[in-house]
Structure formats: structure tokens, C-alpha cells
Length: 106
Image (cartoon, rainbow, N blue to C red; front, side, top):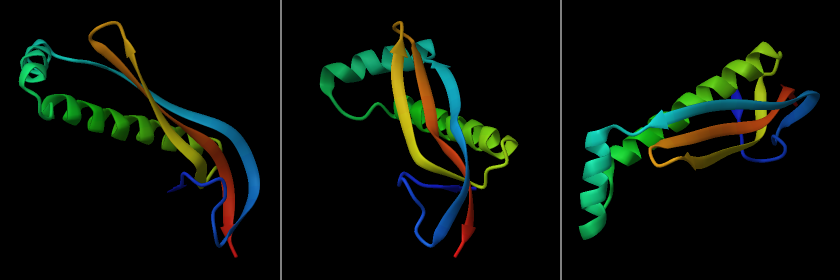
């Protein structure tokens, strides 16, 4: 599966557009990570536990997007993006989205 943030794919023709596809995950922070983040925010620096959680969440959201695109018959996703939002004080929603297409190489 080719995934690009561009609206087209250089060297390829878009043969069919299948529409929007999404990959979604909601992550809950564990209490240790939450406490560590609270303490770290007082002195500054990277919140490594939170960074790891978000990186894993993005990976899972992208995998789900890829699966949805493949079930529609796509071999590429264009206009790929991530969106992240907070749900309450301990949950983070991560959404990967784009447009599923079938392309052929020129």
C-alpha cells in the first residue's frame, strides 16, 4: 500500500477513487505515566512514556486505515493525515485518514 500526504502520486495514474478511509484508536494513559507526566511538567523535558504511547497509537491507526483501504480494493491512499484529540483527562483519540485510490504506474 502506497501512502502519501500529497493529493496525487507522481509517476502514477489514479484509475479509481474509493473515497475516504479512516483508522481510529483511543489510548488511555496508565496511572504511572500520568503521574510521571505531571512531575515532568514541573521541570520540563520530553515525556517519553507519552511520546511512546502516541507513536504506537499512530502506527495502529495507520494499520487500520491501510486495512480499510485494502478491503475497498485500493492500492494507495492519498491526502493522508493524522488528527489527535483529547477525550477527557486520560484518553487520547488518534485518527488516520485519507482518500483510498487505485493507481497504476505510468
